[in-house]
Image (tube, rainbow, N blue to C red):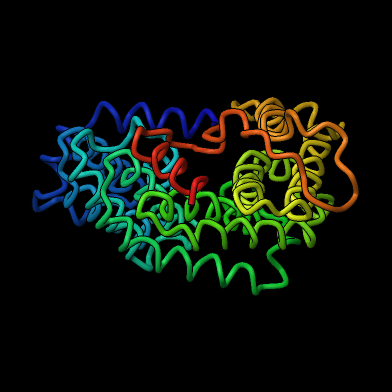
Length: 315
């Protein structure tokens, strides 16, 4: 964050009361644009802290439309401490962002993903059912766009990363609602993508950060093949996971600033699922030891999701 952005953030955090007094006053519409922008940002901070999602959404809309500012929407989506503490208020605000075309497409997409993880934590089946169609539409559009796998945008705006984030999100949503066929289909889609992706076409930071969610999605393909006794499918999934592991070891990721240790996660997942298989033959059935900690692929490991995964494996 630049010094200027850090100073603005500090002022906004401290000016909520002043903003709430000045903006509705007769002078409010006549304030200089930079000051009005700062005061709108301050009122967003105040509204979020008070669970006033309607005010927060209105001011975020005005900042985007009137001032070209999307930084606070970004903060809302990727800094969970900046969301309303009340779950209902948080859901309303994220739905508002997801449905307002004034916001950037990537922000609307990640609002849907944020809502999904709220649903997973709450065990909210009804909201999960509402979220699946728009996220499926997003994933399908990304799959069908030849430019997706050569996207040069940065982390939060990269279309390849968004596609793989969509896969991981759908995997969890389908598990929550007990749609086992869709869980299996998600693994197959990830395996198909593994045959097309060229990490060298993506920015190094993006290629590294997407590896954990890609491994989760590929892991579901492995577990599906395991439960069906499909030796060729298991080998295919393990080979795809190994390719992801090798990508995490690329020298170009040595200086990554990612907080999550994607290298360790991918290696652990692969080791867990491959344990006990020894040196499998090139064809024929695979040995069938129980995968160690199949729930490793879960981003949100609630008791309900663990149970749904167990049901998937035993179906």
